[in-house]
Image 1 (cartoon, rainbow, N blue to C red):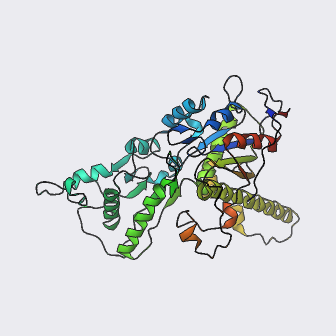
Image 2 (cartoon, one colour):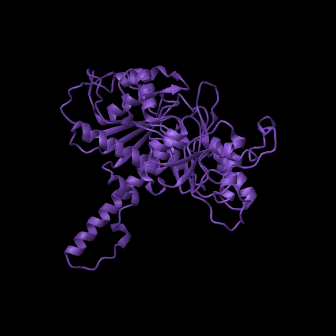
Image 3 (tube, rainbow, N blue to C red):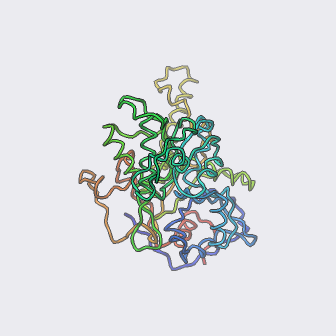
Length: 420
């Protein structure tokens, strides 16, 4: 990995820069700006450099977190307090934010799992018919049997007053894992009808949409803590042990999903538009502390942008060929935009550079093996089952001490401001 050295000279940033910004910033939160509820000292210093005298950002900024246990406005209020600058909810992207695009599920009866105001969160992103784990327990009290103290004291019958579940949405790690694992498995194996026994192993699986694949995250403890990715590992293992089949996902959201970065880039463009900046945002800088989510995801999206640029060049060449009347061998699929580009409009960015800080999950004293054949999945790769290990994708563009150093580095790379 390439390690950046902090330059001795300092940088002065003017609020009245003549040129408009052509870059946007994507910040992780846990391990970059805070550790649990404790602010990282460098964060406040960094953000004083990103705003003018009126508290307005000098460039588009989006906070991309895999957290999903609160509404965007609450997270924006927390960040405003921590950083000492005004943050709006439109600058905050939770792991569940891309669910707004899954409109085909918004009218279906969905089971939601997680903690915090999950019903409000689900309705906020567009779902209209929502069932929680607690609502299932209340209607089917005989299903939750692991904790003896929570078993019904008297014989009871199911109260079948809930509609059949048509999809499952996993927002984040729940509080009672055994209850959630049991009832989600019940829903999947009964095709959403908890009044009936498990169906055959050949039955088609209900759609599952999952947010936040973090195996671990960094709070105040010295070592990382279990994240929602760990809960998903448990659910996947149980489902496969019972059915012999892999649990399938309709969609995986949160870092390192390309979909998440595509949505974040859309929010960057929306900010630039709102501020009246006409200069296209060409470069994105993603600052994070986790190789397997922040760095992997930024590099994966950078690869997507590079491949998209290559396809665009191929299409332009094909148009020239067509204009000359010659036969074209360019595949027709190159002419089709992806579904997400249709939903969000094509990105203006052409690159997404990853910057790793040493204040969170990443331990600079541990080296990452380069040989992907050395049981990487079991010993090193903390990414989700459906993401393959690629050494290039966990190689950050630069490594710096903290978020303040990251901001200084970005300004130097973009020649944004003046050196003294």
